[in-house]
View 1 (cartoon, rainbow, N blue to C red):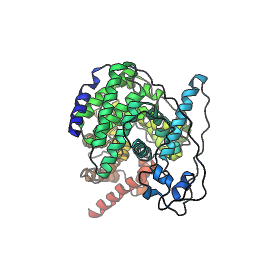
View 2: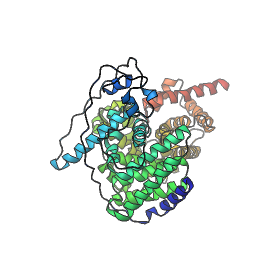
View 3: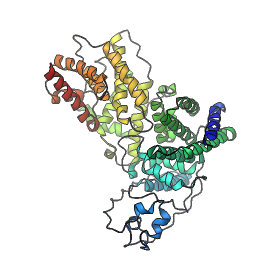
Length: 510
C-alpha cells in the first residue's frame, strides 16, 4: 500500500508544475475564542504547570489521561520547579483600520504558536475550541506540538526564546490558516519523528500524497493563489523533506517550481516586503540545494534597516581593513562591510529586543548573503582582483553557513563546494611575498570550516607562512588582525583560537 501511494505521489509531483502560477493571497479562517481554565494550587506536576484543576487520581489524574498521549511520562505528584518568567510584551504599532482584523488574527495564531513552542508544555492535545485546517490524521495535536517545540528552532542557529522567535510570530499564522501549508507542516513533523525514532514512513508518505493532491488542486483550480506566501512556503517545505531524504531529482523539480513562483512575485526582495520570514525560509532552501537564485534581486537595491544606520558611528570608530585596497571588487566589498557591521553589533539573537527586531537582522543577513553568492564574477584586467574577490565569496559562504550545518535544510553541500573553491583561488595568490593581510582571514576561515577534514592542514600550513611573513607572534596579535575584516565574537573566538593552537603545534614540530 505504501509503495502504491509513493508511486502515485511521484507521478503527481512530476507534472505538478505544468500550470503557470500567479500572485494572490489567502484569507485567514474564522476564529473562536480560547476557553478559560480553572486554576489549581494542588495536584500533579503537569496540572500545576498548566494551571488546571487536578482531580488527584492515582497513578494518573484524569486531566493527564485526557491531555497526554503518554500520561505516565508527565503525571507526577511532586514539587514543581519555578516556572520561567513570562516574556515581556512588545508595544503594538498602530495599523490602518482595514488591516486590524488580519493583524488580530495573526496575533492570535502567533500566540498559540509561542504557547506550543514553550518548553514547559508537554505533548497535550490542542484546545478543541481553536481552529485549524482539516486533516484525516488522528494525532494532529502531537505533530503540531513537535513542530513548534522542536523543528521551529532547527532552521537557523542562535534562535531566541519563543517570545522573540520570528518563525512563530510571522510564519506560524500562515500554517494555521492555509490547508496546504498546514498539511506540509504535519508531513515535515511526521517525517522528523519517523527518523528520530526509527519508525516506518507510512504516515509521512500518506501526508505527502495529501500535500501533493492539495497543491495540484490549487494549481489547477486557483491559479491566482499559486504564488502567494502560503503556497511558496508549502513548496519550500516539500523541497526540504525531499532534500533530507536525499531525493535530488524531486528537489530539483520543486526548486524549478519555486523559481517560477519567485519570478512571478518579482524576486525574493518582493517577498521580503510581504513576509520576510517566508523569504528567509525560501533563501535557506536555495542555499541547501546549492541552487542559483533568480537574478531579479540583483536589479533592485538592498534595503537598509534602521538599526544599520544607527550602528554606523560605532563601526566608523574602529580601524577596519580597507577591503578594496586588498583587491576585493567594490560591489563585493560593500556587501561584506554590511555583514561586518552586523557581526559587530549582534552576537546572538538575545541582543535584539523583539521578534520584529530579530527578523530585521536575520533578513539583512540572508539578503546580503544572497547578493554575495549571486553577484557575477568581477570584470577586471587585474587577475588578482578576480581571485581575491572569488576567494572572499567562498570564504563568506564557509564563514556564515558552516554555523548552519546540522540545521534543516542543511547547507553542507554548498559549504563543501565553497571550501574547495576557496582553496582553488588561494592557490593562485599564495607564494613568496604574499603578505596581503586579508589572506590571514581567508586562510583562517578556511581552516575553521575544514575542521576534521584533510584540507585543514593545507589552510593551517599556508597560514603559518603568512603569519611568519607578517611577524605575528601571539594569538592576541592574529585575533586583532582577523577583527579588522569580519569578526563575530560569539562564533569566532573559540574556533579561530583552535586554529592558532594548530599553528603553535606546527611550529613545535618544525
